[in-house]
Length: 119
Image (cartoon, rainbow, N blue to C red):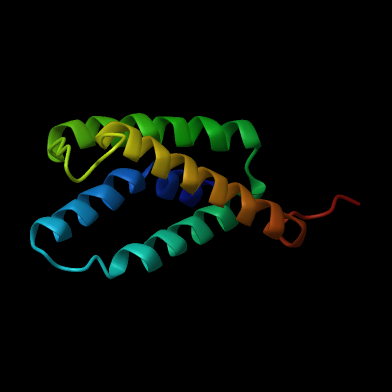
């Protein structure tokens, strides 16, 4: 389970969030998958992180933020009209923090049910 958590958490979800959202905005379409996809991602990674130490959760999410920022620089234009008032990079960091906080909330709620008690 720890390996699947690492693989899912290293997926650059904050970048994919903004890439999908900005792409749908350019096409003048609604980003209907955005909400449910984000909630599912946070729920799954939060549940899987129940057996991982907190420092590793923060470390892997930090790597994901850097990867998302790097991908955002190359694939998402810094459209000052769309990413107003904070800019593209701050928007990616903000979504990363929201995902991390969501993972910690799900982790804290599910941890008592998932962690094996030592006897």
